[in-house]
Image (cartoon, rainbow over all chains, first blue to last red; front, side, top):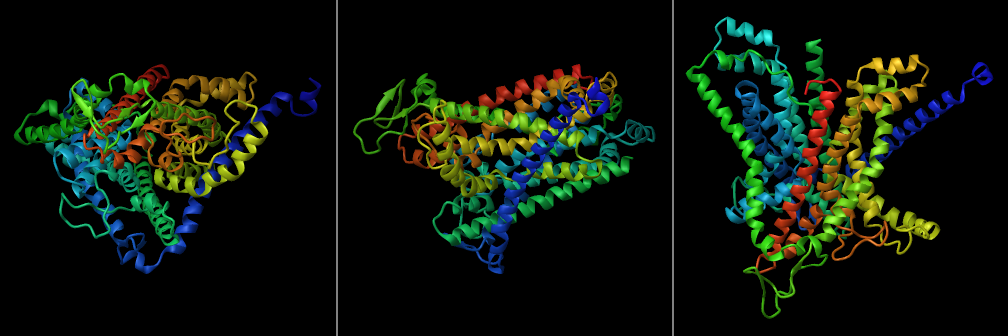
Length: 285
Length: 347
């Protein structure tokens, strides 16, 4: 016990060493991931120029206008689908479903969240692009994104709606509010930050997806038309994936610029989503 | 952020207004939202139905060979005659064996978890215990931002930075010095291959696993840790021998979910795996391929198959991947429910 009195025991040394190792792991992982961001931004930001946002891609060069507009159209249309289906599912699960249906829906949503993105993409390729004859199109791509975004929206809305204080709802019912009114004037305003967070997280996911779009949206050098079918659509992740393996430095610049742009969009979306979470926690405190 | 929502739901309201009153607007709302619920429910069944129906000719044509044969060959478009098996035809010379891809999927996923699990545990412990309270929100935000980076961005970094580094530095050094160890010797290769895929996959699942592991540790009450410290453990012993074992089911579930994610990952692996066809890796630097990446990389050539059997076999691959990830996810959810019950959280 002499050691214990004069300094730290071997046990304490072991503990300190292990904590140091775990901190080193944290630093290493954060360092590597940070170097990835830094790498993409360092290559992408210098490639930003005005023509990137005003011209379309031409073969292996040009701008990104078609891809930017395409990505946002796909995500926006997917978001419309997912808002209706996702919120509807969550409302039904929380308000109307019998307990067994609640469990079943939550289980299926979890299963859907685990389906690999390429499986979703190939499913819609078979069902819509081939069998339904839509060809590569805006609608097929947006539906692929919607399926992929759905679990995030349902879960967030489910949690947000389930956490509406019971006393508030009972008070409303006691004052004579109709059930639909309870949903729209009590549940929704209360759950809104949580629901918005879920929608924004879904947007972030949708912006970065590639695999479900390759065989549903296709690719086009031209500006997306408003045609829902028979007209392929360009998107940013496709530029990143294909242009990085072209042998031309101009294509590489486009790929890095697209990657940097996408990261900025996604980070902005995530920060916005976090700000809703913080708003919610501040309010409920 | 998604990680926070894993234990969805919970407190079902005992008094639902729906139970108290049935009116017109009520019925309309119930029907409309019910339809939405059915839609999201139906997606999974439609997905399975369409893929299986489309793959049916391939399932009959390939038979059990699909799981035992290692040769993927769409056959010769210009060859004479066609092959017919069980009433379904393919191009001459066609053979659709998926064993190489199934093996590749499982080995990359398993090795990635071997790297990612200890690292994630260490990082999560450090986040919970050693990171000062003042910078913890920033660290947490960083972890969640990392989980949101698109896989194609990881792929770009892998292709431009990681693969050349493995090909010119790491692989020659390892094969040169440690070549006597099995699977470390032999050809160093170009850098595209198993090692690069495993590294990228590990990086991609670490943020997800750190976030979930951190959440289950934080959800465990402090009293276990404090009690353990009070009877003379060091903080490390208290954490790893008392707190961690008490949440092991939650951690196991998060590992399984991350494994499922790794198996289905497409773009990043596609960009660094070397797209091996018909060969098994000789060492950790050999090219490999996974089910997800082969579906993307082979579809274009499959479209040239006039008999359509190649496309249908890709659908069979998609079904196989779907089933593998489905099984893993179902096990993960079951483990997680068990964990919630045992560890005293609302299931």
